[in-house]
Length: 264
Image (cartoon, rainbow, N blue to C red; front, side):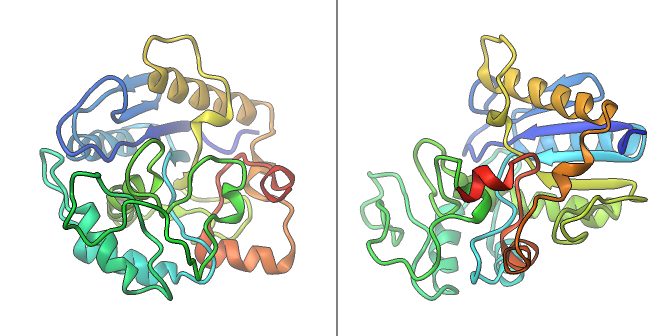
């Protein structure tokens, strides 16, 4: 028996202008593929899919939804929603928001700004003193920390522009956000489930646009696992009681990342 009738994978972008193709938003779901030029357009496309696709439905987002333990995820979420200005043409103030969020933390953790912004308050390089973990447990096998705001693999910029959109959809569709709303367990009897995903965890399908090949590959991967009855274990990574508390409170988990690989 499958867990979900529909599987969506979203590859996000923190771009500051409308963009398609490489390094833009890609959405794979219901055997359809979309490349909206802005995050606002992506939100509308996701609304359409969430209304129309068969339920239960799993939607995976390719950006961090949580932060390393001790960061106070709920407080950061609220601050991001209040502070972020993300216009319909992708103009946004994510670097200014990162500066403000640093005041909520024991020491400045967000870093990485364009080098030409000499007078900006965000450090262009990683701080030498970090009072919180640089990475979440689930990020051990991924190249970049959630705190990084600029440059290759800037997970922080994607998180700050993506989290408010996910929270908005969660409210509109009464979705459950795994594992924060569900605990580290299989989310049964839920019409819509959101999770964090990492498309690079599976080989991309051959495609001149790598992002497109990645979202197609991961959507197919989840569909195949579900048909085989092998998707459920991904929602229950074997962690210690203490690690589970960190994951469920602040950090979250990337669906499909093996605990042994993440913690090794």
